[in-house]
Image (tube, rainbow, N blue to C red; front, side, top):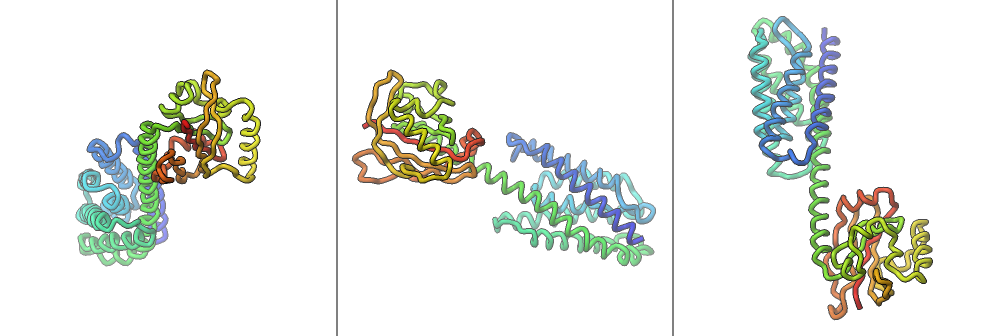
Length: 350
């Protein structure tokens, strides 16, 4: 009996994990996040998952079923907040009352206790604002399911002892592990979302600086193609942005310097010495009308995986002071996803 129960609970837990992944995919849309609509939809979907779990339970006695709804609702309270958790609890309780049976009181009690413990723990975590670790998730799972075992005293008196002796080991061994696994998936999702938000904010700062700068900002990829171009670059070089995106950086220099530039690009791509990266150098630029002009150029580099872009060289008369570093946003990296590295150039009229 215990072996069949253990196998059934593992199967139910596997269903829980697969449904949580489907939920994660469907509701990862940025425009829905942190809105009332998203919270309501999340609660309804999670409640539906809880009902699905109760439709495929381990049937222990007539009218007494066991499943992994406590894992689902505990983790929901921990990660999704009040409205989704209360909605999911209401839907799960309604179905359990409809199902009826000798275990209905215990069933409703476990739904309410797991959700409330998750909410309380999540509220505590928000005040601490530390990263939640796998060990803490496991301890959280143990607490939720110790309370679940206490709820067994709401079963009919004649089956309480049998239930406790049969179910304690499978519940304590399997359920906290499943809580830790599901919680780690959602914690990783939360970290990714936070990182994406930081990248978007970083890109907005970069855009604000580049757009308002009086100096020309030109961004090129590892193959030497132009991938970004600010309004000052349009004024300096005479090209509209739409005309230069995707063009070679050699478009901006006199023909006599182009071979040297291409040789330098090949050297950098092959891991050779970087002669001008991180330095301010005096060069000659070429406008659209083929006229040449002297310019001061500051060249910086970053890899696809992220990183900061060093600042441009300071204009004359600033006593060598530099602006704060500019962060590279995800959009820039997405545009250069096929490149080994990308280059940030600043040009300045002499």
